[in-house]
Length: 129
Image 1 (cartoon, rainbow, N blue to C red):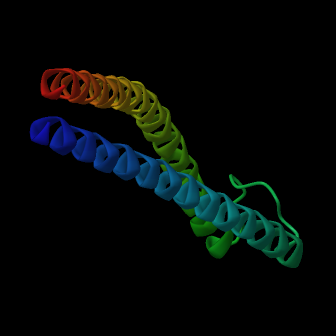
Image 2: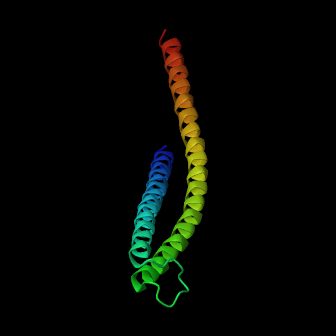
């Protein structure tokens, strides 16, 4: 019983940790997407200010080039985070399935204990008479 309770507590902790990990990755992706939108607006503003929107032009804004490079790095990071998110969601689903199994086993074990205790009480009552 004690080991099953410990196992149940461990799996609940793992499940909660996986859920937090998924939420954290989703928050990071949302933050990076927001930053990407800000960089896009900054690039458009810089290009309109300079009047040149071709990055290969010799007079293209250095600030816009740096912003483009930063945006491209953000896009790579977002892609990697999405891969991590998929892996984390898969691990969360696995952990949820494992937790359900352990909870069902604990529930069945609890029901069996109640039935055994009830039958023992019935036997004692019969024996006393």
